[in-house]
Length: 155
Image (cartoon, rainbow, N blue to C red; front, side):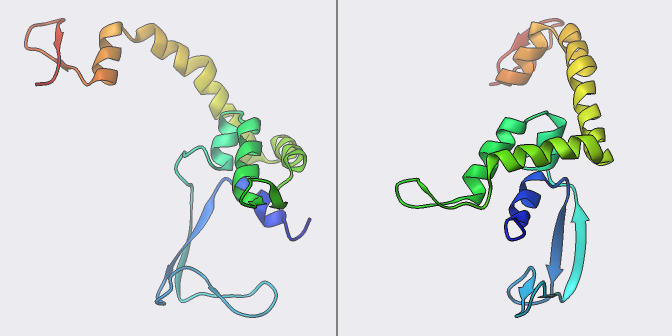
């Protein structure tokens, strides 16, 4: 499990680290030895964008199945036939880690609370206050004409 823990961390992490390295290769430089790296420059932490590929998305939108699919697709090495040749991510272990984080990690619990707020309060409020003209404007790129309460397509 120790060798695969980085895979679970990559899938379930809420944040990420970045490096502004002053070397020609960029990023972290590997050096020989256990848990060693060389850094020339600055390291920073950030919240990745909501690209449906990280813990921030998976926990906020209650997407454990998507997390399992993403972990399997990106972490497990496959041969030319698509068969898994080297497992680095087991869906059942990912699911258990997911559940454990929802119980003990206060940041994960905050993500869950924000997702619930969106689903239970914000989305219904938007649905009640949005008209079909608003949707047409957003989806099809319509622009309001000079006449009030009328829309016309972009020219």
